Image (cartoon, rainbow, N blue to C red):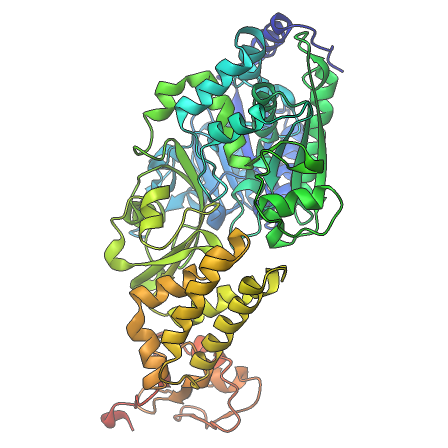
Length: 630
């Protein structure tokens, strides 16, 4: 048990002691144990590694660090060996012996575990791998250096020094001014300047004020906040304490969804360690500042990410939004002034204090400073979490970091901002990614979801998918959102089913505009974005669905049929054996045929047909097989 710190100088002494016990040249093996890598048995890899090192008598020479997410989730479990920065991917327990005998004992590389890019180039060092090379991991970089259950790891990397600076030598007003000058904008979606929100809460009448971490991350495909809390919870907690000091709050809440058990576990452990050290509770670091934190677990409603809905949920009420006649910074939790920022916003605060306003504002664009973490997913070779400076182009994110589109397919669009964001077409790939640029083209930053789509994606189906999600997640409190989303979804379902009529697209735009203008909260106000943006940039695709009853991407089941090209079919029987409804017939080594009456359009035959044959074809509308093949 560590002694309670009673002064700022005592923290400095502790940090010096921790650093004196650490050899920067000692071999350290950092292994990702975030949720994604755990799904690939990273815990078994870690246990095997530790056991084998102990057996070989190397446990004193080699330190194994169990960390949070490294970001390159496509290739997990991920391992980085320091100080050489050797990176291994897709580690299995059977690889542990070779890693120890070859790399740790002799300094040799295990070639099969190295990164290989799309052109076959091999990279052994982390900084040479394009996925990492073009990033700027200001907030996320320490994830792979820290055991989230060991506060000493955080302290060894300047942890809580920003808090000590604020409590020991800066007034609350000075801290507030630093955040305002840094122009730190909220990373949760709206991009509202954090300093202005802090100031409004600080100046609001009332003695009791609250600060809140919004960790109710619910966008499909997004997991940035979860990974920060799993891997480096102290960065968020330190930012939260600094904000509370600047605002004059002595109580805080962390609102985190029920589906994030590992993040909750690491948060609770971090809070325990802070209390033990005197970094939380009464008279923090002997400065007279008091602060306590409660972790509140939400039930997973997407709408609870909205500020007033989240605060209603904290109060034990139904998580639904309230009219914003009075902002939550004036009247939030229990009617008290409450400041709400998301996980990534809070994690930026200690960095700004430690490195300074000038350093922070040197990164990014004029209106969007610093970096942003995105979950890069979908039809892209390198999926995972990426942190880039504001202003990097979509082209660079998707093709330099993401490695481009798999299987030689053509890029079609990227959807940013989660289910409430918009789609951006190929001709806008040079767009700089920041709050204002995305807003101008009908999309949004959102919390940082970035879903890449290729030529096989139907944009009408994409809009329908996101509206189905939003229809389920709408609280139904206001008519424009409840009925507007329902009616937009109804039209899209008709269009995808081949039942669209002339005038439907005009009606769709009209309903979308009404929903956007009249809804109570941001869920309804932003719900039309995927519809309006896809209509704007892919109108011809909508028209094909309505006028020609054709899905150009061959996705909408009601508009496609499956056929086997007799000129290409070699009778291998794969489609016949795998068809779940026995709709395929044919003799071995003879062309097969599909009974369209039985076919359920499950896509199985198309997926299992060997690429060298490509005999199964999807047709839509008036499309036909080439005459020479019939």
